[in-house]
Each structure stands twice: as structure tokens, then as C-alpha cells.
Amino acid sequence: MTPPVRSVAETGSTNADVADLARRGAEEGLWLRAERQSAGKGRQGRAWVSPAGNLYASTLIRLRPSDPAAATLALVAAVALEEAVRAFGVHATLKWPNDLLVDGAKLSGILLERVDDAVIIGFGVNLSEAPQHLDRAATSMALHGAAPDPQLFAETLAECFARWLARWRGEGLAVVRDRWIAHAHPLGTPLTARLADGTSLDGLFDGLDAGGALMLRLADGSLRVIHAADVFLL
Image (cartoon, rainbow, N blue to C red; front, side):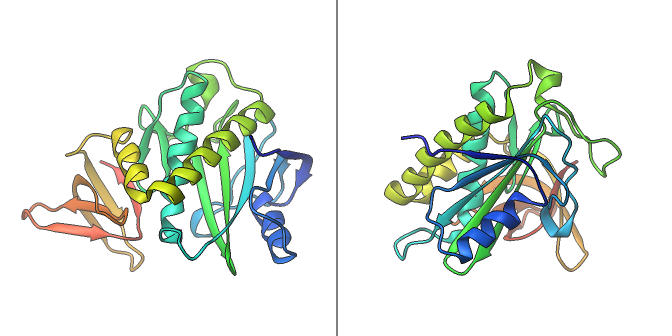
């Protein structure tokens, strides 16, 4: 059964709203979508530009003792979103950990936040309009076909996410990892990883390790396993 997606005209941040509901005991499977956000959030505290016509939606997962590592929900979210985008005729490429690119330009963003035993996952997808003047190229689904209705897209995404969440729990991370790699840029793609300490590493994409971390092959032939970084195609 597809989880229902509740919609509101405007809010500050769907992630903040769902986090508040999580603290009040909301159950897993909750979805909230807003037509607009006045305080949308991206990774590392960045603002997320939120004009009407795009997707701004968040969902709630309650962690179970038998679940794979919570951080790997980033891969679950990514493969679910790629599948939803593909359902509307747009073929996107995954970039670690959970960005979707079309012709090298960013189509979406995913933000995970932890609240006690819950993980809030926020999705921002450029359906009708791509923001300008960012530090990287951005695109929209409208530039690669018709822009889907945000509510219909949210319902499709909720269905895809529920299916991949069930597989993550029932079959383990490997099935999600394999799907992620199958729809990522090719092995050997040149990447740069900007680490939390401000340093950068250049290397070639060498897949994901068993835990979902990025493997980067450096110029000297050594392999660096990266658990947290901003990653860019070179």
C-alpha cells in the first residue's frame, strides 16, 4: 500500500516539521510535502531555494535493532528517487552519496537528519525550475521532458521508497548498493572529494565498499575509503 502524502501550501521546512512530529511520537511512513518552503535546508547548513512547482517532501523512518546502519538510508533514498525520476522518463546518474545528475548538472538533493530513534529524510527535486547562481550546475526535469505534477511525483516517490526500504530491511544493504552502483557514473570516473577538514582528494571512482562508503583510487594506486565528503565530478 502506497503511503499517503500530506500536502501543505507553505511551511518553513518539511524536514523541521517532520522532525517535530517525530518527537511527538509520529509513526514511520509519514510523508509531508509543501508547495513552497521559506526556510528550506540543504546539506551542511546550506539554504535550499524553494520556488513553487518543484518537490519539497520529507518522510519519517523509525529505526529497528535489526536494521542496517542508519547512514546507509542515504543510498536507499537515492535509489528510490532515481527510480521515481525514471518513471517520468528522465534518466539520471547517481553521485555519492545521494545526488542525482543529468548531463552532469544537479537535479535533486537529499538531506538526512537524526531525531532519537528516527531518521528524517528530506527530498528536494527540481521538477519545473532549476536554481541559478549556485556553486555547481543545476537542471530540472522540465528541461528533459515535461515537469510532473509535484503531488503525483511525491506519491510515486513514496511508493518507490517504501519498496526499497523493505528490501533494505529484508535483504540487507547489498541489494541497495548493487542498484546504486548500476545507476551511478562509470567506474574510473574522475572525482574530487572535499573533506570535512577542508582538504581535497582527487582520484578515480572505484565503487562502494560493503558498508556503502565511497572508494577512491588515488594517483599512486592506493585506495582511499571515504565516509563523509562533498564529491564533485572532475
